[in-house]
Image (cartoon, rainbow over all chains, first blue to last red; front, side, top):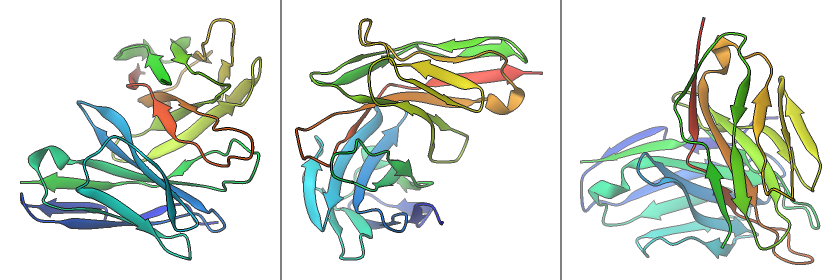
Length: 115
Length: 117
């Protein structure tokens, strides 16, 4: 079974631009979460989607948004990029089975550099 | 709120040495606990997990026991190899009530392990 895939793997943008990152979860997984990883702040939770609905959101500005499609694939968008948005963006998927404390499986990440 | 405190690195060991990476947590409920590993240029890989008190997670020679009384989940390996060189993250998943299927992960800051031959 294929793992979580993320595209693109690397991205260079300039300040003020916007960017869209894509995540395809493991087949059958219904929940997708996004995390930002930076040397200074470590791993921080962005948001979580289940059945096309955002169920949980971290402490990030409104410039960070996301969505989930009916096939569970997810995208996240960052508008008006700032230098501090340079990071590794990780997507994770899980089965989200009722009653289980499901395990999240991570993709390889998209490394974003903002110049 | 929920949080994870992890031993600061870097940790440098010789091959076949014993490894311990300390991890303690704060949680309001009864979380599940995880260790993830990140190799250079890659995402996170699940190493092991434990879902309730006194559970022991194990994988590839690594072990960690969920200790509710000390709120700890220390990672151990009896004999490390060069290939174990990576960054290790302790994490917890919060429980959000009966019937809830969802949870977010709270991560420690990570511990860089380097193993020399």
